[in-house]
Amino acid sequence: MNISKILVAALVATAVGASAAPAPAATATPAAPVITLGAVTGVVQIKTPGGIMTVKAGEPSPVIPTGAEIVVVSGDVTVVAGGVTIKAGAGDSFTLNTAGGSVNVAVTGGLVSVVGANGVSREVVKGEGVTVAAAAPAPTTTPAPAAKTETKESIPADSSDTGTTETTTNTNNTPASSPVQETTTTPTTTCVPTVSPSSPCP
Image (cartoon, rainbow, N blue to C red; front, side):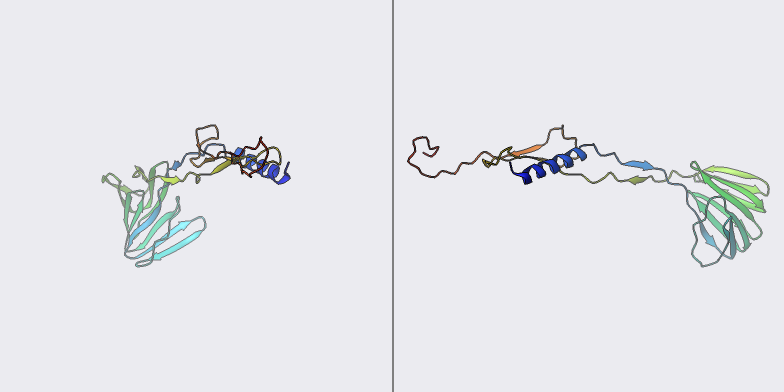
């Protein structure tokens, strides 16, 4: 027997066995509502456990973490979270929490207008809060792994190779026991004219 053929057969069998498991299907994960500043006409402070961020009119909006307190120092601000719009003016302050497909607004100072994703508007005063359903977020999809190709090749057990090779290829990510495309070549015999009557040549 040819040792290299045995090694190749062992490697192919190992690769085929490892890739025989079916691929997991793509999964959808709901996205949490992102909190951003929609418009700022003055100065706004965003208070988090990590510190205070100050945003002035014309500056880009940072992504605001859930639980942050928004304090309007001057001008007006519009905050957007999951399709819910919160409008506040100078002297107003509120905290925002997003979880489970809803937005919770708790007013810590002044008067805040909350417009739900459905268009319904509410006025909320200091010491009160409101929880509003967020717009249904577009799911983020985790793609399924790329298709694997598995190849099995039968190798003759002895060193007298007759030229017969059978190859099975599976490129549709199904288990090896599933029907697959098969390609088979027939044995070839090389004829050398001889004087022997038992010669396979005509």
